[in-house]
Image 1: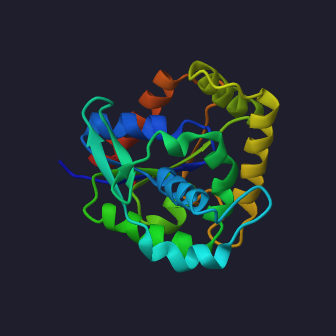
Image 2: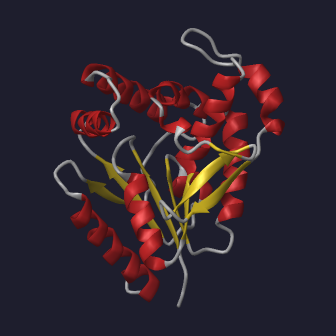
Length: 232
């Protein structure tokens, strides 16, 4: 069966990773969470004290990029690929609010983006890949057969994250999460290098009022159409 590249871009907390994992599992494709890669570098910077609430040692981080090794390993328990930073599984650590607060600043750095784009393109060189992020359809895979751009109301996205944190037993206010969502939207859409933007041939999905199951079936049908060549 013909294999294609599926690029899913969009705002934070729109469920990109969730539906990307679903599609990859159903189609037997490789799933790559590009956001996890940026989060892993952010975690590296935090551990090295290269970023904080009022500082970012940008030049020093750039000098240390060569020390960062990233790869994904399949976890049979969670049935998904999890990211490893310099040989250590950091899948849980990178999901913290501390990392979320800083990741957009790290993602702005051109040298960081260059390193990760090259790695992402390597992961997807044989097609049969689903990748989500901010610039997958515009920069990483501009020739992807299927491009999706996901969006949703900011308050709805903040509410989703708030409920996820509550389920994990984390005591974080809705207001702080909403502020983080708005801040990340601003940084992602206004940065000079590869800002978040909808590719001209991407299909926009607003899932403000769409549940995960319906969303999955919508995207799955789009993927099946592209694989079968029913859409030019």
